[in-house]
Image (cartoon, rainbow, N blue to C red; front, side):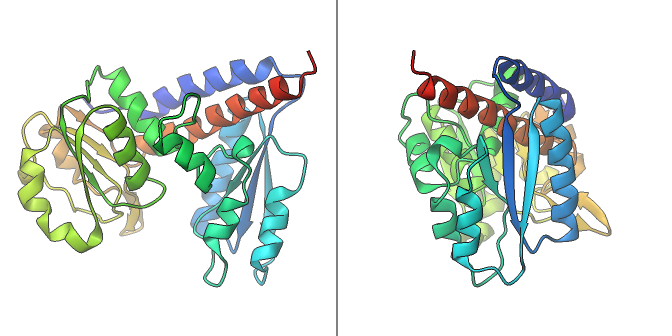
Length: 278
């Protein structure tokens, strides 16, 4: 089964729009950006369009290229937003950890601040799921994949894909292993034994059909550019071996963006309830 990420994303955005429709104002999602690349600017345009689909307004705040860490933190903390995201990567010279830590947990739709992530990591009731992990959860739910007891491999340990996806798999009862760049040479030995593989390495052709067990769940969350095209980590021929396969583009990416805005809708609703004197 090849996953239609755009169709799933449409369902989630409709859910977010329904949540937002009950609020007394249009939720504002602020994106703080420093030194955006052409790819980043294109991605932000997509996010702005999906925000509208979710019944929200995307506010892009571009900080000067020579901004200090304090300048970026000030933009994060500026009032007027229901949710705040910091577009990664940030330029060298900025304290990324300090900037992400400055996002209030009550506004952290990306679950990138330490406090928000710890809540997710510890499985605290009501904690938001990071968007890419949320996308993996949606794919598994919609394809009736039971994660508990499965052997799962996560390729890459980044804060956007690998780390939160591995944590979600562990929460669901999977026997989950994470492979970093330093241990990537072990992949050909590990992959044939896995029931579920989630890749976020950003390395074209890293996963080949001959590496896989027949019927594997293969979720490709890696993106990179090859010969002018956006490609994933998995060779498209892997779809013939996998029982579930996500293409790139059009697979995990649209679902993760939709999960981001669903998180934002939830945060806006919680803020309203918290501030309601009744």
